[in-house]
Image 1 (tube, rainbow over the protein chains, first blue to last red):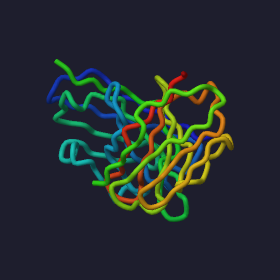
Image 2: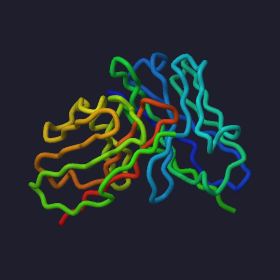
Image 3: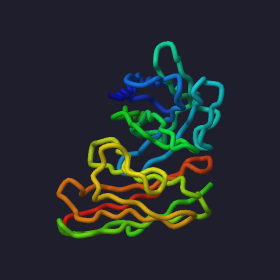
Image 4: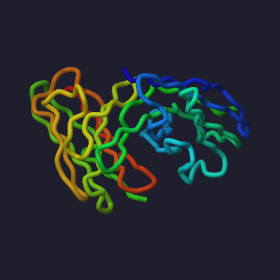
Amino acid sequence: EVQVVESGGDLVQPGGSLRLSCSVSGFTFSSFPMHWVRQAPGKGLEYVSAIGSSGTGTYYADSVKGRFTISRDNSHNTLYLQMSSLRAEDTAVYYCVKMGYDGSSYYYDSWGRGTLVTVSS
Amino acid sequence: EIVMTQSPATLSVSPGERVTLSCRASQSVSGNLAWYQQKPGQAPRLLIYGASTRATGIPARFSGSGSGTEFTLTISSLQSEDFAVYYCQQYNNWPRTFGQGTKLEIK
């Protein structure tokens, strides 16, 4: 069974930094791209960042580019999101998402339960 | 960026009814469209990918159709556990984008 578990969410002051982790099991982690998606309180879903299966390709939403860094450790089945220069608008539940493959493209297959990041003074 | 527009924003329906939710893309996404269900306090759950393929374990009452820019999710006979928010998402272009969601309420 696929399991995706996020951790690291916390209350942080504006301008601060935080690192989220995502531990996975039940599938071959090194074979799949992974994404971070967030959801602000009472709002919809927003793509944040993506990383290729080997870690060589990384992608970011414009809203976080230059402030967030995605990475992965395939030897420890763990995905990371390093967040810096945090703003109030980064307040959200952050989901770690495993990709599925439909033969031509990757879709969002399995989601973790999320970890809450609150940016406030 | 491709804008995904869902309609209606809210739908009040009775258990047992058939419902159709719509999702429109601002440009073609081919068949690279997924639907997700989200209940309060829970993570989204994949229902449909490839516009019409049900994910593992999803009941047959859920069906998806469409291609290009127009897509629909149909629930043939609403069950009590289906009242939730539904999101469409395109995975044809970067950045991946979601619709704003359709909330199914009990009438």
